[in-house]
Image (cartoon, rainbow, N blue to C red; front, side, top):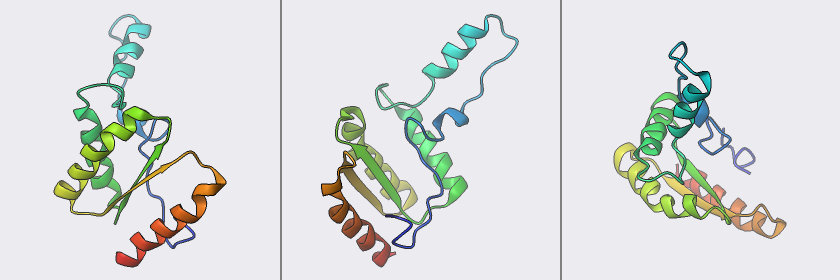
Length: 126
C-alpha cells in the first residue's frame, strides 16, 4: 500500500528487519556460542527494557536512508511494540522532525481500506 501510494520502502526495523545486521559478532574471543549469545542480547528488541538501543538503531537507519516519513507497523498481538510506539514516535518527531504514522494491524482484509486511507493521507502531506 505504501508503494501504491507512491512511496518507496527504504528500510525495515522490525524483529525480522535490519536489526540483526546492525550488530557485530565478536570473533576469536573464546566460545563462539557465548559470542553469539552476547550479540543476540544486544539486539534492540522491544521486549528488552530499557530499550535505548532501539532508539539508537532507528537513528542510524534514519541517518543512513533519509526517509521522508516513518511508518510504525504494530501487530495487534505484539504488546511490547505497541507500548514502545509512543516513545518511538515522540523520539522521531523531536529528533528527526519527520512524520510518523502508526498502523496497528493483524493484516486482516478488513484493515486494508483504513490503512490505505491513512497511508495516502501521509503522502499527500509530505
